[in-house]
Image (cartoon, rainbow, N blue to C red; front, side, top):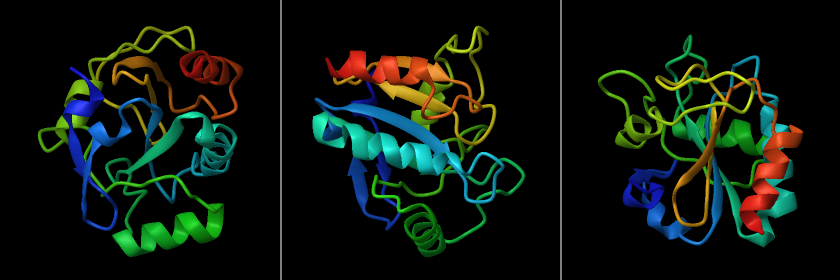
Length: 164
């Protein structure tokens, strides 16, 4: 199944057909404002600035399932991201990424194997800032552990290879 087969609402509540990203490389990341990994927003925005005009985008998906670390309203999330980290990449509505109420997109993504950090893992999303690199055809290229920083050499190499 392709990423482009799914839809999700934007942070402002309007519909976002992920098919609109066809032909682009997307780094899909579940995000949170009050997490120890929240400073990754800086690196994610740097990726957006560096590769955004080359057919790439970061797509942030707020989630409050991990210790309530994304408690804000849509307006509060947008304000935090734009004023604290200067985020320009798109953000979706807040969704569940695990459990019976998980968004269907994450039902599909949870089956993707992660081996970027030397561990083989598939299953539930482990924490905020788990990343999925999706190629221009909508297929997942790789899943990254939440601890993998946006400036990780392997992630950068994978992005540049996907854009080539």
